[in-house]
Image (cartoon, rainbow, N blue to C red):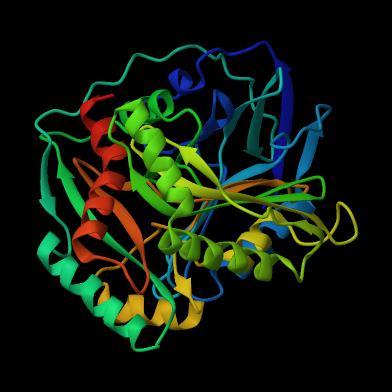
Length: 412
């Protein structure tokens, strides 16, 4: 397959999500109004299983070898660029890598449009705001694979395994089903999430959408960054009370222990690929509208400067981190498969974009849902350690459902 790629600098296109047409094959990766959107399908790879990341990286290299590219801007996200969303588990591990027909980008004062087609140069699209999407109506909610009480029993089982010495930490997830009276236009929750969670990365790839606070890995011209989140407390809406809770979170031995596991797993995974790694001495508290997290930004430099592993290969090395799997990872993932009681699909797995230079950003698909017509399957997970309380963990999971629940109903 030979792709013809043209990137053209343009004037600021305005609110980027408003440019998306009402069609299922749209894509988004935005934070604070910057990032990428796209639509159409110039090329698509569907892969699965334990080799899904390797297959995707090989396919991407082959596309790059034959592509004809006209790109004078040379910024990350220009030229030949793809969006990807990967399965959490090796089985089934259903994953996609997609090259849109049109990509619109904005970064640090520059804006551009990239057209991608087969064999012939595409016409530059006329960019304009599309008619506003309609809000979902008549949304009702139901338990997914497990009821709240059943999930608490699973958490209690995990705590027993941890206290017996089987492992140190496991991240357990649950799902919730939201059903509207008519098919949902994904642009509605995307616009709500981008407006209410500006510090998160709002994403949509192949019907998986959300606003993740966690950057699994960013690679930009040799510099690698990973944001680790582990340790959570729910906000009350009272600023003074929330400040006190943030201080409590920062001193919590349970949460600090959970966080340390997650940071160490990221550092260990990046070490074979990177030099000059920087690990802050202590986490900071990240304040989101619904919860607060302990957070650490890990930075490093790729071996041999700008060459070496691309961002997808780094994401594969990092997945699953302790923040979404547990510690030790192998034992934790095995326990998830044994007791969690559901298929995570592409929840808690890498989602993001990559360009032809191997630069890009992959977040972890958290605070997310999978859209299927009129139904959205919402996901939330919690880190379970030796002194975790099942009732508290259920409350934390319910808090993590809030972003997508509110986005579906238009609540702040």
